[in-house]
Length: 149
Image (cartoon, rainbow, N blue to C red; front, side, top):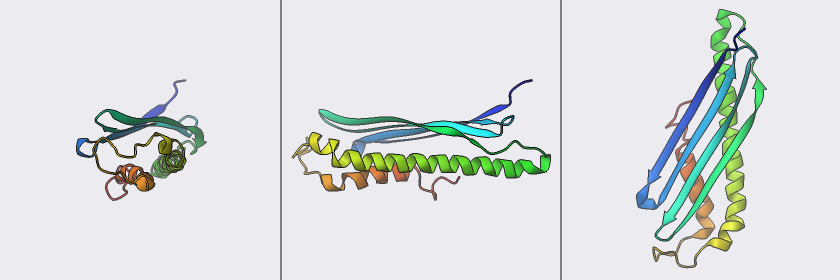
């Protein structure tokens, strides 16, 4: 028989030249109606730039296949769809948690060794709050009031 699969793609990007940042978020999910499963991945790209220097992040997060159960009766389709949305929401939240953890670790280790005392823009950057700046940028794309699930 034929395998019934649906794809869901979630994409957002932000380019803020004034603040020298840009980034994108792309999630790809595969729903298998035959197996009753959801699997997927998220690709995040961010760039902070200024004249003569930039810092870039490219990360791919994969999600294991999870069981949601196949739709058995027509009445169950709405419940099945809600179950899929709930699983995807959990995967998206997991991706944000992993990125938050990674930013926290990177900002206290690697970025401190790379930072300039006086950036090219000639304004002292508050490196102790750099994590909150990156998390604010991420959260703007995941604000539940802006993007309804």
